[in-house]
Length: 480
Image (cartoon, rainbow, N blue to C red; front, side):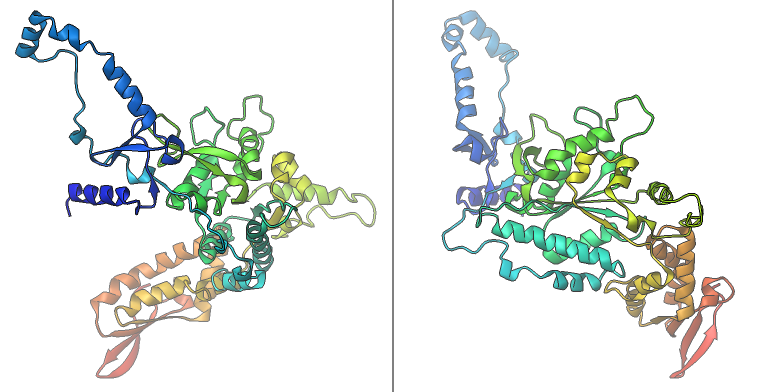
């Protein structure tokens, strides 16, 4: 189907009201809900009554009579054409407003219609956690906290119009080292609940008027993830990663445009307010339509590693007693990898987070550092575990891939040395599986490959089981 035919089909569907999108004025960029009735022109171009009236008024101001009563000017126009005057050819404007800037119509609530979130259909916290257990290994406390917070949030949405008591939002702050599963936990949660999710990086946010992304751009990303549907956007989840990077800078006299100022600008959005966000763009300008989004029912989850927070917690714990028989040793907390589990709001204030910002994140959830046992389970237990992905790839070549327990422990030990959490697992396996994935397709007789600890530690080769004469034969290759 050609582009012109597609535009005609979309134009006909828009005329019939079957597209589900609001029309947008090609001149003022206002949606149909604000501008009112539209005049439909070819190529899916729509102009509101106000803009059409202004265009007609400007055309009426042209002195046609003076032109016709001047024979000399008419002769010149016939020779050289009309100077300094041009007309817009509507055929040159293809497509009108792009689909990325079109807005879906709001659904009208009908009498007797069930709400989008029904309390009876909401999964209970223990069911949410049970589904998270299939994908996220460990972090039992974090999964329990997030499950309860999300359940209460959507239960609040379902009952907010049924009672005089107004329930506040339970925004969440996830604190944990890199690679502990903060982003993965939120992604899995949004997938299980089937709600739109937007992930933003706090390092790119700046105060309004400076180079960088405005705070409102995070809501614009959620609007795009919801396919420009306002109703779905106002029930979505926004995850702001690297939130510790907007902490208040210490010992500085310059204006903190990407630190404390960003925290101040996020206060109203976290609490709930109506903001205008651009449709199909990250910045506001006259060529982009704007739409109002209410953030009152949007769940905000912030996450950060807070690398120097351990020192703040240590200083607070050591102040209890420093002299006498009950004094704490200076190195008592140095080897505690889960020291962030003792974090308090006062510690976060000293780190650089302003009290007003922390007050809008009532649920503070620290995550555990991954141990060797947890990393081994991450390798093989989840539904989309890394080992299962490689086993699936080799099964397409009719080759079985096995990892013995020693190899899994060796991979986990190397991941702990890199100090990047679960992210190190894929990097390590990619490194050791390179030669195997290169050599396996060469020989159709290979039936099974077993990865051993000696191969991971560089002291040997994987065990290759070759099919010869119908009988398997195990031999070691030189892929070390």
